[in-house]
Image (cartoon, rainbow, N blue to C red; front, top):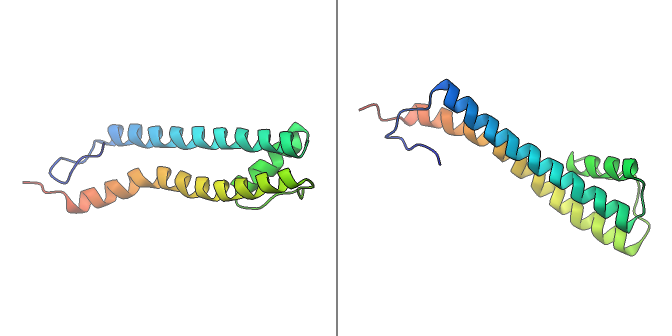
Length: 113
């Protein structure tokens, strides 16, 4: 997927395309994760859509839920979703930063021979 140190660094346009593709995957991951969280809160806690959105978004953003779960199933879902949200946060950051870090390292280690 990425060029080796024997290959020339990507042009600015190709790098921008790679960065945009990574950003798009990150956005799709966040939207899907938000949908999973909303469905769970609406199903297990019977929250209205806006409250489910708020709780899911707050967990994905690392802030924590707004409404404390009331049911056993809701508590289990909230705990699992919180663990999942922490991983999604890390994966999303990695998806966005990977092309930039690779480019910097590639430019420093490029064999121009």
